[in-house]
Image (cartoon, rainbow, N blue to C red):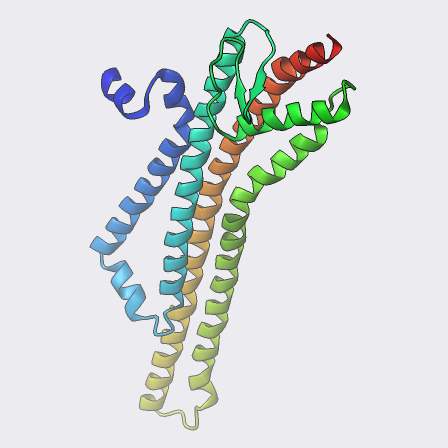
Length: 259
C-alpha cells in the first residue's frame, strides 16, 4: 500500500503536500455520491421538470466550472508546497552558507539550482532588494505583503462566485413567488375548477422557489468549503515561505552584506 501511495504522490513529505488535493477529491466524491443518490430516487429529474426558468441548472453549471477552477488552483498550491519543502531542505543541507545568484538563478553553495517556484522567486527578490539597499538592514515586510496578496488572489474568484450563487438563489426565490402570485391575480371566480387551476399554478411557483433556493444554498456552501480548504493550503505555503526566508535566507544575506 505504501509503495502505491509513493508511486502516486511521491515521498511521505510530498504526500502531505498533496493533502489539499486529496481533500478536494474527497469532498467532491461525497458530493457526487449525494447527486447519484438523488438521481436514483428521481429527485433531480423532478427538480428540473418543475423548474421552467432553468435557474437551478444555471447554478449547477456555474458550480461545476468554479469547482474545476478550485481544483486547478489546489493542484498549483500543492506543487508549490512540494517546491517550498525541497527548497527548505536544500537550504538546510547547505549548512547555513549563503546562497548565490547566477544568471537569474538561485543556487546553493554546492552549485545546486533551487527549483523554480514562488518561494524561489521570493528569495531572488530578496537578493535584488539587498543589492539595492547597499548593505542596509533587509526588511521583507513589503515583499511578504505583496506575496500574500498574490497568493490570496487565487481564491477570490471562488469567494465571489459562492456569494453570487446565493444571490441567484434569492433571484430564483423571487421569481418563484412571482409565478406563484400570478394565478391569484387572475382569479375571477371561486368555483372548484378555477380554484384547482389556481392552486396548481401556485404549487408550480412554490416548487420553482424552493428548488432554486435549495440548489443555490447547497452549491454555495460546498464551494465555500472547498475554497476554505484552498485557503488553508495557501496559509501553509505562506507560512513555510516566511519561515524559510526569515530563519535562513535573510540572516544569510545580511551576513554576506556585512562581509
